[in-house]
Structures are given as C-alpha cells and as structure tokens.
Figure: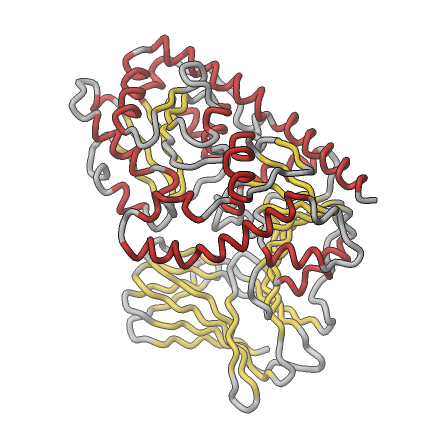
Length: 512
C-alpha cells in the first residue's frame, strides 16, 4: 500500500520527530489525513490499524478511518490509539484514509501507523481463558481510572492461577479493538461478537461488572449457557432519583434525569427478575451489605436469592503501610474523578476555603489530582492559592502510591458510594480519610478509629476534621496506623480474591 500525507488547513504545520513520529501543531480547526492508496482486495475482510498518539490536553482529537469504494461511497469508523483496531473492510473498498480531526490548540504526536490485512471471517485468534470478564469499560494507558478495581482483582486472579480475558461491550459493529493492559488481554467488541469470543476462549465462567439489558441478552444467547456471576457496584441497580445531587444545577439536568426514568425502571425490572432467581445460571456479588440491603434490594423490590457480599479488593502489597511521621498531617491529598458531583469534590474545595483564617493554613499543602469535565470549574476557587497544587491528569498506580508517601490526610467527601476504592487504597498506605458518613462508607471507615466522618453535605464538619488532624499530631498518628490495619483486614487482596474465586467455583458447580 502506498502512504501519503495530506494536510488540510493553512495553519497546520507538520514535521517528523527524531523518533520518526509525525508531529502536528495547530491553532485553528483542521483535518489531517493519512492516506493509504491502492488497497489490494483479494478477499480482504479486516484491516488491523495500530498507532500511538500523544495529545496535548488543550487539543481535542478524533481519529477516523474512512473507507472509499470504487463508486465514491464512504464509510467512517472511529479508531483509537494504543490499540489494534480491527476494521471490517467492505468488499468494494479501494482506498482507506486515516483522518485526525483537531480542534483547540496544542501539539499532537502520532507514531508511524502499522497496517495488516486479514482474509478470515474472524479477525484474530481469541486468547484462551478460564474466565471471561464482561464489562462496560476497562483501564487503558489513556484512561487509567476506568473501572480500575476490576483490573486490581484480575491481576491477582492471574497470580492465583486463573486465566482471565476481558470483553468490553461496545456499540460499533464495524470494528473490534484489542489491547493488553499490564498483562491482561482486552477485547472491545459489539454484542454480535460475544458468543464467538466466549466460545473461542473456552471460558467456563462469565463475570459481569455493570450488568445491563444488552449484556444480559448477549450472554443469555450463548449456547451452551455459561455460569454467570454479576457484581453489583451501584449505578446498575439504583432508582433514578438516588443521584438527586446531579439535578440541582439547572432545569436541563432534571429534564435529562426524567428522560432516563423509563430506562432506569426497565433496568430495575431486569434486576428484580434476576434477584428473584428467574435465571438459574446467574448469581450475584454485592460489594457492601449497606448497598445490598438499603439500595439494591429496596429499589428492585426483591431480595437476592443467590448472592454473597465481598468488597472490592485493595492491593495491600502495592499500597503497603509505611509509618507516617507527624509532619505528614500538613499534607492533604485528593485524587478523584471529576465527571459527576457524586464524588463531592465541591465539598472538598469548600472545606479548604473554610480553613483560610487558621494561623497554620499557609503551612498546609493541599494537592488535588484528577480529570473530567467538572475539573476546571470545581477547582477554580482554590487554584490561585499558593499552598494548593492542582494537577489535571490521570495517575498510574505507582504514581498514586508515591503521592500516598508524600501525604498524610486523604480528603475524599462523597454523596453516594457503595465502597470508595480510592479511599480504601489511601487508608492501606496509612493516610487518614476525611469523608462523609453516607451510603456504605461506615462499613469501611470506623469514625474516630480509622478515619473521621462528617454528616452528609457537612462542609463545616469536614473542615473541623481536617483541623483536628492538623492540630493533634498524636491523634493523626494513631488514626493513620489504625486506618491501614482496619482496611487491610477488611479488603486485603489475598482474602478478597480467595473469597471471589471460591464463590465463582461454587456457583459454576451448581449450574453443572
């Protein structure tokens, strides 16, 4: 195939870096096109497109593969960097072009593109697996926070001799993506590929995280049926009004929630039938007793027939305890997503502002890390304070642990949590959590013993708890040691994964 590079837009500049990457710098909207000419058909069914990209945070980029037929019909498929994108090729395609649609300003670096054709009906050989994990998302190098708690347990599954494979259910019918994240194989594919993936992998159990009607209907169609364990994390089993705090900003938010009401009720109808035991192949794992009895079963109006409660695991070998010194209490850390007000980041900001008149305020460093559409707006009130660090970025597990070592208090208000995994990781490292006594938090933090809890929406309470820890070194050190001991006993990865594997084995045996 011939390669050519076309540049559309006068303000776009291009050069090759020393590593051979293409580098684009722009300030105005433009489209950059990589063209691959003269596609040899000869039975070509799939084209594997692989490339990497580094995108300036100020720049918005979409990557699109465009197919052109001999009669000038085009079809466009979204492709993603850092993955192998297996794109279905139309029988009469004669040319493909990879477009980079840029908006904003900044620098985009794209590695050399790699192409490979496939003439078979299935694009690749599915890895063998004991267990097929089906989810709506999974971590990737560019999205490290996407359901990282699933990845934590799967790495431990591997250590304990289980071979997992992840199927992320996507809506696109014309592309299958594959990648490996820290040793775990991942396939992103539409439901129509589900049975092929399950059958080809040889998996004897299905583990579902965030069940919905599409995923259930896909797995129910597998022949033969495979024993299925469903994890209940929260959003998949809540009534529409549970997240009331997201409706407060404007009328549009409330209208959107009401539009989702019917869909939520249909979802709860599915959960009610499955909780009741209508499908003998399905059983459940709840991550907290509070959420099981106060939300999941209440909203579905049905007690779960085949279920157990096992918290999400915390990798206490990685987030290991290192005794803190007293000065650590002057370093307060927040690591949170910013895509919903559920996480209470606005409460954290308000609590910091409430402490400005304290004589020691300027001696305390407050560090906020995270990303999401609410990041800039939420942190604007504290961004200019000299003792506040604001970093809009995703963090690796190693980077998170390094920050745990530099800080002593984990400020993590919340409005609704079935567990609070990032909080539990910080506790394992010895940070003292300051959060709200809402939802399932009290199952993981004993107020006054392993952390400090404020009432719901209580900014003053959060500020008072921070003040208590900062002004009382002995109290801080006591809570730090107990936070780690308490959460490792409750959620340590060896114990949790052992319990999960035992439940998977028991439920799989009961279906055979």
